[in-house]
Length: 379
Image (cartoon, rainbow, N blue to C red; front, side):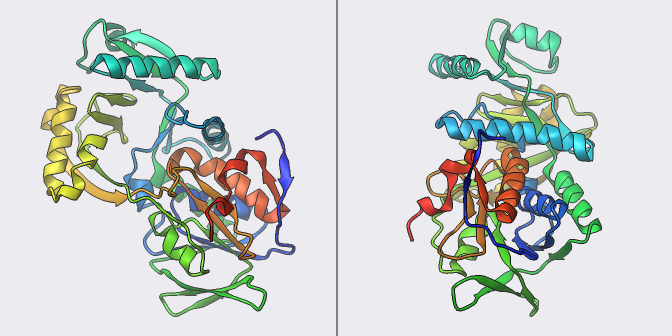
């Protein structure tokens, strides 16, 4: 991946790596480090994969990542890394490369959608355009949408069952000798006289000798960074996600309809999300009411969902560094401390895991990560 690498300070003789946070990003980093021979300790205050990873729309894509070409390229690499990972560990039941549909309901939004699709086509990203009638006949017969409406289809995109993938990665790493400490939080990171990471103290009273700490703590990443006197500015951007129980899931792929995002979540479940509903979180609206609003929006697109039972709803904070882009790599002021903090963790987890593991052990930073160095945030 990437067009090359640049020299970056590594840690000679790395033996033990503490990966703090075991969502998709942390699991991917730890799995890759374990495969490369490092001794890995996974640490999570909860259970692996059951935080933000399990409460994400979990859509692997680069079609919404066009603000910066380097970010788009990293996300394309992330999609490729998922396909490679499916070939390595097997795709079931976490990998669902069924494509993604998107359409709009007003002229301005439709023009923006088609303009983005044209740009992506110029960047060699696969895009297909159908009418609403063609979508119903070829792809999703359960949808309600106008016959002549333009609908963009991104065939290489996918949805990912993040919790299942985390379970696979952590399970394989543990079977190969990694250690899992779940249900315990990091309380302190100890350093030696030159400021290098040396120990991690946990809330269960234990203390671990380590050579490296990888901060993959998602929404708590700024707190972990503070343990080494590192300032990691984060956005506050909460999101609400709802799961519906279905006797039979009436759709086959992820989609962005006007006002609502919908995707399958296995054979008997559907996931709903909407940024418009997210905007109501801070008004104090009851999460149960937010869930009912999501279901009502989904009913206008997929009528069969109107009577589906609301099974679970959760509000979580997304792990987004202040400028909106990933913070991945070494923090030079604290030898042995690395960050792996990003939104779009589902898309980027496998590629960040591979690139950061290589950087830690080889001291070489891949150019795909050049724009996302943690050092861009001042002390």
